[in-house]
Length: 201
Image 1 (cartoon, rainbow, N blue to C red):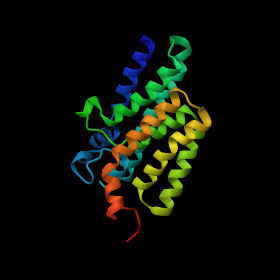
Image 2 (spheres, rainbow, N blue to C red):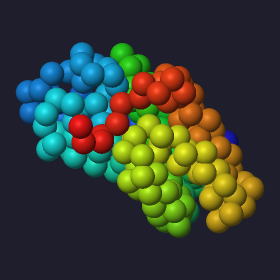
Image 3 (spheres, one colour):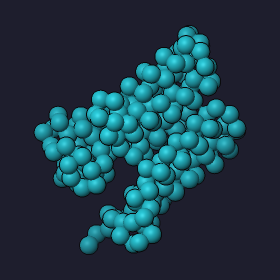
């Protein structure tokens, strides 16, 4: 890694640290998402506040910051010497910023929306494929965490297929492992049959 790569890494991490669940909730005078439901600062938990608008804005913000970080790195790569490894590191850094945001006491979300944004920006075919997988699993199960877990498991497969084995593939693999780790409590609830769903009562 060179100096432009390191600068891009730091900027990406700071972008990722913008926790839109908290920002949007404060702007709309809603409770802190850490204080109710799962305590996770993400769109699904924000929806539990009763505000669909807040949930949508959170989803868009968390997704677009992943898109923005990677696309900015790609755009500036030829102008400032950001390498292929640097772009892959940016992908991980913005994701880690969401998981451990420096602006909010390192208490971040699980990273599904931000990872989705990163994947769309790395290669639209990966983003589209995973969005379709998520939508299909969610439509069948109505369980958001299950859809996220299956999508996470498939992400490296699609990255390998479309990008081959290189820096971007390893970045996607690292994100997939972290996503699954962040969902460990959901996995326990899924196994025990206690995971919440969006099925109508």
